[in-house]
Length: 73
Picture 1 (cartoon, rainbow, N blue to C red):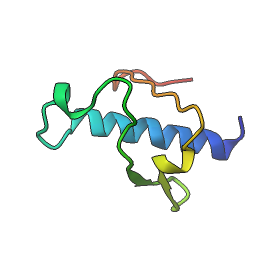
Picture 2: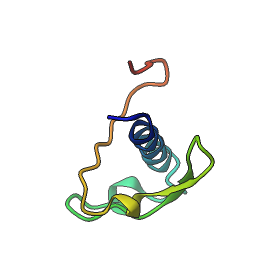
Picture 3: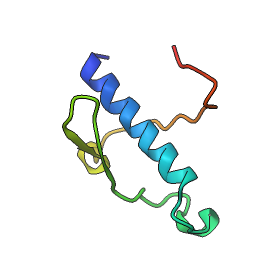
Picture 4: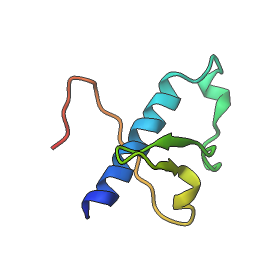
C-alpha cells in the first residue's frame, strides 16, 4: 500500500469514527441500518485535497475503531 492510499484510508477511518461518535444528536441505533450503504461525507486529507467516501464506491473500505490511547503501527 503506497503512502497516498494509506493517507486516504487513515482519513476515511478517522472520518467514520468522528461521524459515529458525533452523530449530530441522531440515535445511532436508527441512524444507520446494517447492510445499507454508508452516507457520503467529505473531509480534508493531510495533503489539503478533499476526499469523499463516494470516491471509493465499488471498492472495499475497511473501517477500524480503536481507543484514543492506542497508536496503530
